[in-house]
Amino acid sequence: MKLKRITSLVMLWSMIMMTYTGIILYISPHGRVAYWTNWELFGWSKDQFADIHTTFMALFILTTLLHVYYNWTPLLSYMKNKAKAFVFFTKEMVVAIVIMLVFLFGTLLTAPPFSTFLEFGDEIKESWVEKSEEPPYGHAEESTLKDFSQKTGYELDQVLKVLAVHNITASKSQTLEDIAMKEGKKPGEIFGWITSSLGENRPENQITGLGRKSFEEIAKELNMDSELLLQELESMGIKAEKKDKFKSTVEKQGFNAREVIDGFSNRFLKEK
Image (tube, rainbow, N blue to C red):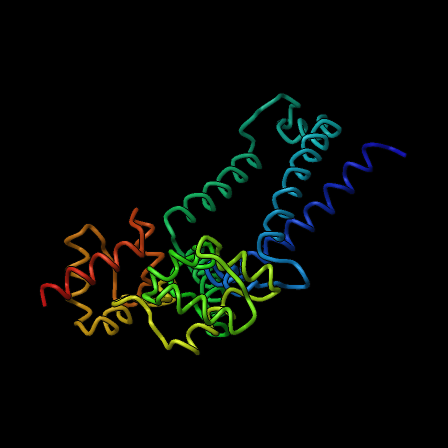
């Protein structure tokens, strides 16, 4: 066996696995939905896809370094002119660097077609929300029953009684995730039992689905004019258009989407 051949083959398979897991992570639902519904594809969870992607990335880097080592002479030949003199900035190298910079800054500046590609991925991610119940707030599955009750407005004793009806004994310090895992259920399923028994009881002014909703849709939920919403947000340092996605636009400008909508809605409603 030749190590050089093994290196090339392992690098190839690493690239294939990185591509596969990268595509799945590109289309998989956002964490709030994935963890709430125990989302899986082909038996693997979102975290497992991410872990596999990371480990194969490390393997790919290692084999790439070995590949460079075994092919150092051919690589150097790419940086020589017709006179066989070493020239780092050959035409091919310049083109390669330009392509790399276009992708780098195109992504950072969210310029088309990179922004279109990323937005398409976000649309696929958000489409999973329509197929599943959305959590009452981000990462609700990580909350203890005590915190969950406080944030949703349910009485803790009532929540515990609902669980008892389904033959689940739990304490206020346990998280929904722990309870669901122990019972072989989904956090969203347990939440469904609670809402079925106690009724919908989301926090006042709580708006969900910030990732998939535009500023225009957010304004509609707040019963206010979209132009007024944009003006109010601009006074906070957030610039946007009506059709822009709320969460991605806000977070690109250094703000937390949930904090912005909660703080803004509370202030606006008080003024009203």
